[in-house]
Length: 482
Image (tube, rainbow, N blue to C red):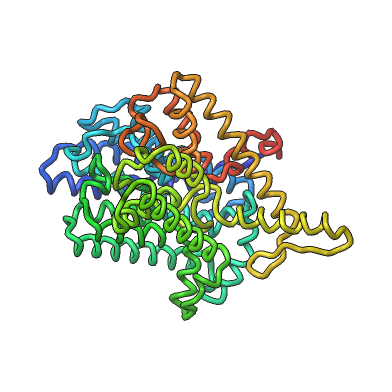
């Protein structure tokens, strides 16, 4: 029988850390003379009590999780943490239902960026910084999970990074704990650097901190209803573009750069493919806006590049209502939201490497049809792609499409129109943020959706962030048998 004690102990530790994180919005509200600090204090007490009880009840069980426990721990953490992170929002002056509060916190921790809130310009500062913190915590959790957990679980082809990542890292740092510590250090450094640049560009310190956490985590929560459009600053947009890209590249590569391999980013096939795609999309959208929408070149590059990168990386910031650009842009943005960034980054979506593996495999299959006696072996980062990896990638992409169709239909069944149903499900499953149309587009939010639809979309955010199989494997009866 599956031993739950190590899982519950680890979950208790994570809840305790989440509770301590609530100290930050408490101090922010106190400094702003806002009474919502009492709400955070109560939520912190409840969360810390529950987490502490789990730790005390399961202490001495060890901290080494086996494969099945790792699957369960991964899913429980991303499902339970939002439940407690939602408490301050449900108790606050916002007067949210628990459904709305859970949706908002799940969107934050999974770095999706979809929101049910309006009137952000006058929302208490504690809530605003808490939303940014949830994305920031979720971002680093995603990176560590992608480096240490998902390759071990062999989820959706992630095993292709198992040997490569740890062979490379072992030359840099001796133990996985040190790897995680180094990545967290880089994550903090990038956040601080982004905040400094924002302040130099004219942002206030509070906005700079909140948006830097959202940018590096590719989360997209803003402190204004107009998102980045509220600043109307070319410099702010360019800074955001840079850090959205930084957050979407594998953090393990940054360790190699720090250790004396400055070309590591370009030498990595996944990172190189992502950067090429960014260049093609930015150039294409810029050209289209100039030729067909009569934008100036400067405006086309600024608005086109910012918003297409925001959607591609799953950040979800918006500098303008790009849904008004016409059907071509709507279709392009809808397709791009599924691609995502790199594995091992804070980004989301299907991930660049899966498309690369699929294309390489298809190329070899086509060559084999033409030359049946030939031997064609697809390679990734100069290593052969095993049949196991190819099958995992194909299974992941097939399952992704099937879940997208099923959940879209379920959302439509709650009364949403098909544009809203498909785009909201797509943006939730890909952890992007805004959808398309007047309701959930960049100028709208998710507040008007039915509560059932919000729970469906919360599930979609969870499944998308856990790479599908990490959560769905728990539905197998074989998983629970000894």
